[in-house]
Length: 100
Image (cartoon, rainbow, N blue to C red):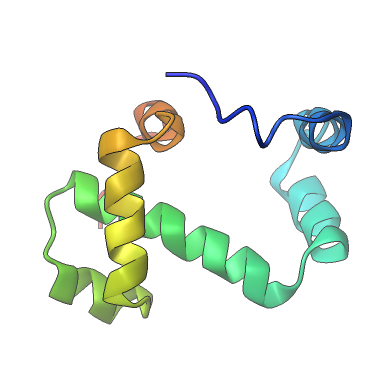
């Protein structure tokens, strides 16, 4: 599935091209700390964790407890996993298995 054309524009292209230039986790921390608020970064990190947990078939209750996100956010992430642009699916397939 392709990305939403409403998102595509030269400014967004430039942002994603800049992100692709980051080489290390430290560079990511530095760039994202400057470009986004701590709350925005944490929200993105939480959503990724929600996607991982949904992929492992964890319950909404367990996900809410671990991540602190609302059930509405969990539902949004689940909708993207099932009917989105396959971005979560792509990244989850590339992440190494994590053993807790």
